[in-house]
Image 1 (cartoon, rainbow, N blue to C red):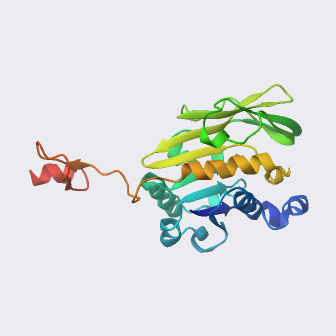
Image 2: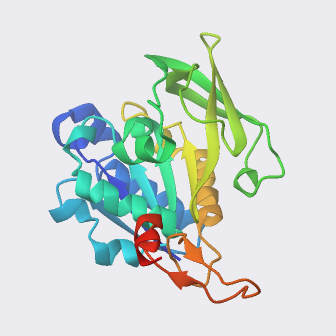
Image 3: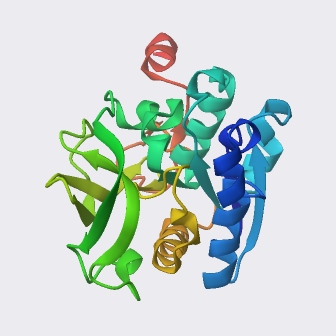
Length: 254
């Protein structure tokens, strides 16, 4: 399995306390956690790389993309977002972490604002497993205890998840759908919220386990990645579709 961890890598460059927690960058810490828990080829790239490190060739060779962003969502090129979007519809897995809820790619896939309530006051977060049979929950304690974390709370403006795996509660009394899965086209998506830059959450062994489980779950089992295609079939022919780009072109041919 080929896994690519994409990180914004901005906080680590300008905020000394973040650099102290993640001296090699959050993306490298996340990647290390996946390697610890999964036999996979894991690499990293960042926002400032040419084409954000997400060229057609790189994405075509990526089974699962892990995304962390926060302060520079607007700097992500729309052409790159469209490129990632098409790859997800074709079957590339996508793991969206923490503030990636407000990334262009997650919003495009969800079709909603993806807004929520938040507070950063070193809350304790308890991550409760609500679907213990799900592959992403395997080997994960109930609950995961994160001593200091940014609070994310409802209402979280996302579509109803295909599967709700985790719900978090915070010391202020808030609750949040912190682990959700979605399917778009042939692609599988897992959103997992723990992981603000101001806290060492990606060093937490249980958080690392969840992310690795999510990566493994999100890998497609299709023999070939491709976008779902609209095809016309003759009566009685179940196998050989006629390819075309859309109903307007088909109508013109008729």
